[in-house]
Structures are given as C-alpha cells and as structure tokens.
Image (cartoon, rainbow, N blue to C red):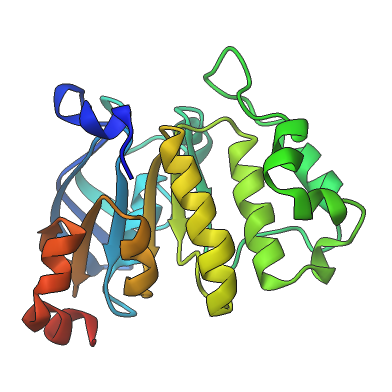
Amino acid sequence: MTNTHHLHAAFEKPVIQLRDASANYGGLRILHDINMTVMPGETLAILGRNGAGKTTLLHALFNMGPTLSGTIEIKGQAINNWPTYRIARLGMALVPQGRGVFQTLAVHESLRLATLAKTSRDKALWSLERIYDEFPRLFERRHSSCAALSGGERQMLALARALLTQPDIIVLDEPSEGLAPLTIDEMLVEKLRFLASEGITLILAEQNVSMALKVASRSIVLSAGHIVFDGSPQDLLEDTALHQQHLGI
C-alpha cells in the first residue's frame, strides 16, 4: 500500500511524539520511559502479549486513567494535563476495546449522536450519507438496535462513529477481538487499508499479529511496558527469536 502521506512522511512533523513517557496505575508502573514518534499517514501496529501495556499506551494518548510522567505531544502540543475531550478535538478518535456502542440505541441514532462532536475541521469530510455509502451493511441495519448487531457489524459501527467526529488520527484497541477470521479479512483489513489510503493516521493495538501486519506500515512490540522492537513489518516477520520471546508465536 502506497500513498503520498507515507512517501512524504519523512518531510513532515510528527503527529504524535512521546518522550520518556511512563504510566502508573495506583503506584504500579505499567509503561517505562517510552519514546515513540508517529508520522502523518502511518499505520502503526502496537503488538504484544496480554498485559504488555498496549491499552495503557493508547489510554495515555487520551489522558484516560493512568498517571503520566514524561512528555506526550499531539500535533506539537503537550497534552499531559489536558482533559480527554480537548485531546479528541485535536482530530484524534478512539475505537475502544469492546467497540463501546450504545446497546439501547438504533444504529442510525448512534451515528447521529456522533455527528454532534465538535471538531477542529471547518468542513466535514464524513457525513451520514458517506458513511452509509462506505458501510452499506450499516444502512441496511440502520433501524436495528445496536444490541442486535453481530460482532463485525458492531466494529463497523464503532469505526463509523469515530469517522463522524472528522478525525485525521484513529486509535483502535484490539479491533479484531472476537471477530471471525473471514470478517477480519473481508471487513476489518479492507476498511483499515481504505482509511490508510485516505491519508488517515492509524494506530492499532493488537494481539493478532498476522492481522495487524497485513495493514501496518510500521510495527512496535511492547513487553512488560518496554518497547523491545520498532521497525518494519517485514523485519518483525523475519525476527523469529523476538516472536518466540515477546509475542508467543
């Protein structure tokens, strides 16, 4: 997958930068001195076993939960003490683990609710009409309760809701969790590749290494809160010792 955002990333400023960032829950350190840069248009896969610190890293980007030290910058602004809603208004959206849909709402109601979010963009790139064009299954299910959706449909809805906030950075926590292999290949991988081709910066935390490396332009491996690998998917695939030690594959 090639687009101009990837080709010119080396000439642009980072959209996300962490310097010596650590995160603690109740005095227990989860992340240790993380240094990480994300360039515009990258698709970054954050990989690691359960408990490696992947979700904590994502939550740190939104100042959700952990106590932080070090520096986290989004689009050049240090956001350490910012409230989550203010960080989101910089153009960043989170698709949480478990999809985070409202069970009692109909699909159309849930999508309309997402359009109320204030954004930094003057013009909306994603409308309900465009969402229904790109996610025709959601149009078919627009009057259905969110509780009645399949796992794949809920993931489509969660992604669509994120897009309606007009982000240029989307962060996904375990997007393949609970999905059938065919749904992962035909829906999730396809949609993430499409969004990358649109120039959206994607960050996904995953245990499903095979799925993540199908879409990633770069990969990071976390182990016990430390970055133990940062490089290309191809280099990661060829490092069998690292797979066995830190990914369990």
